[in-house]
Length: 169
Image 1 (cartoon, rainbow, N blue to C red):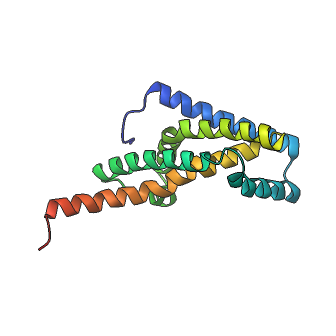
Image 2: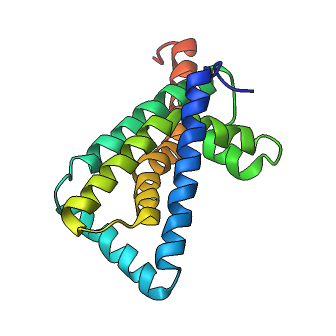
Image 3: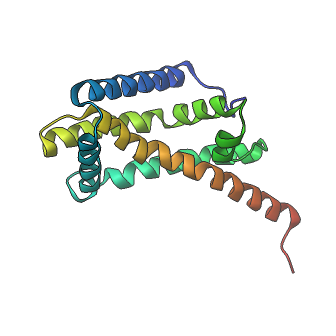
């Protein structure tokens, strides 16, 4: 069960982002293959990104993901749902639905990340590594959401318990 009703536009955007990410990963594998050399280049490029131009996205995208995680974590607490990452890891039946919720909630942020990393690669690297673009977008947009939604849910529950019991003398 989703915490809110998903609009057709949100669902369409999430599907678009998943398809684009899949195509980019496929292109990356086709163009560059998968080897230790490629992995080394990816690691090197990712480590160099925070010090280069467009560093603001390393704050912007995780902040946007944290806001989405806060909002959804609050809804989870209100609906008495299990914390997000815990549910993804332990709930065999509901993990797909919960993962879908996360993709829908972060689709705009991931799309922004894909565009920003594509621009970064064109300007700084003078090349395009499609799979790397997807990896960076997931690291900056989806991973913070996954890691923060559960703690925000727990925080909201703690806050609600504290408010319902009143101040402790």
